[in-house]
Length: 429
Image 1 (cartoon, helix red, strand yellow):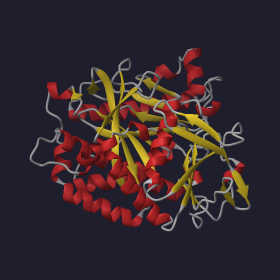
Image 2 (cartoon, one colour):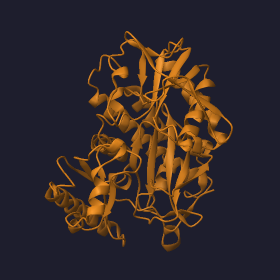
Image 3 (cartoon, one colour):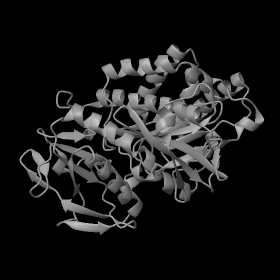
Image 4 (cartoon, one colour):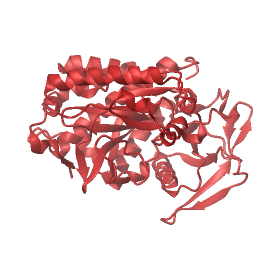
């Protein structure tokens, strides 16, 4: 299944997908050489947008929470990739502690935890769940809608090791993005592997740092491919001091919006694109689709009403927004069942293991789809992201999904570069 791409009706796609298809051997060799120099995060998901004239990542999540949305057909590949990751980190590992988010009432998220646990157990690990939630003071079973039962247990810290009662793990896998900061229980653990490292959490991570690394990766890749880097790379800017409640920093924000819109207009003119340029203003740290708005004119950010300012001023865990990234808006012209759609690609280690479409029937082609009312359409990405078919047209399922996998892996590579550069204790990890 390939979602309907509206631009295919109004004119031919630019040749990006065809170029990627024709260059498959060169692309795979390029990645192979890059992974000799960089270590991928344990896992990662990337939100992509396909505008027909541009295919680019718009968000990279180092604590993916949607494994339950993957098609069951891709699970063997996910297990294989997890085995490769564990072998590199702790090959004789027996026990793994998985630390999820604190929201124990979100059954969709808990189904993700159950799926992730199942994948990890198939690698030969004993997996148990330790919670940072202070309300979890004893082993707490939680029944899921499908009949599965998850048991959350309170963490126990002994010296420089973290575990559970009668459970001493070799590695700790975080599925908690640390938006509220790094808890004491996770600090100064020098004898266990923490995956991803603590500085991958939103307590320290910034989206702008990631996209600065992506900008470099995209330029190197585009030089090898002889394409315009803009085809796979969204422009962006940053405002480091803003307060939406007090309306300070608005000039910085408006100037960046104006600057980016100008750059996008030039590119649209160069390629004969008739759509109206737009940008996305988003919190520089945080997730769950919070603190995001679509902007088409610089004046729009100077005239925000109270509701819009309140929406932009806080993100997950109620944290105040003081830094924002202004990112080139990338249209999505894909639809599933008449709902606007965007692909989300999941990776474990350096391997694409699956993906799905995020679909929102009430959002527009220029809006954030990660919002209440979204739905997920799982797709068997596994074979099609890895095995393009030169005998079919570039937009056929195996080939379009292969292109998605290529761009997602560029974002994965950028994440590895980002983590290397922001590592506060490089000798530890």
